Length: 136
Image (tube, rainbow, N blue to C red; front, side):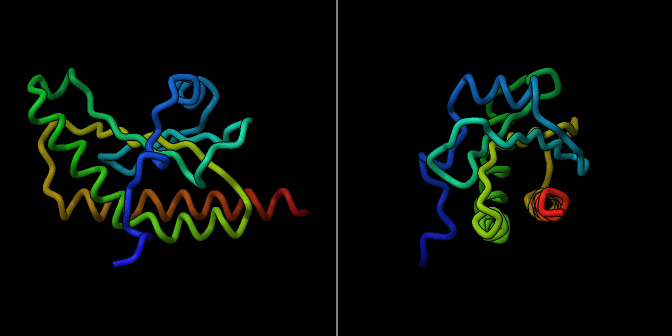
């Protein structure tokens, strides 16, 4: 098994400064039930994309449920991220992203995986479109 399906420590979004910047200055879009906040950082980061996941404690009172959804989000991201990494590498860009689960019911993994694929495809299109706009 190759390294393309890992989700290492250096890929995880941990920096408080970067997290705050994503929510203050970043952009977002929704592919229900996942809302993505993203930002191209001012300072270089040590990986193409730093990613984090979250779930509202307002909708899921029990930590067990929140943790399960976060595990499923991380797994869906881990298995679907390779095309996004390729696009970022080709365009020489770096990104910080935060995936937020916004539904009120526990998801099935298959649904979450499909939606994550759609979110990442939409993000790839945005990166390519932005790159074309900056080249002209």
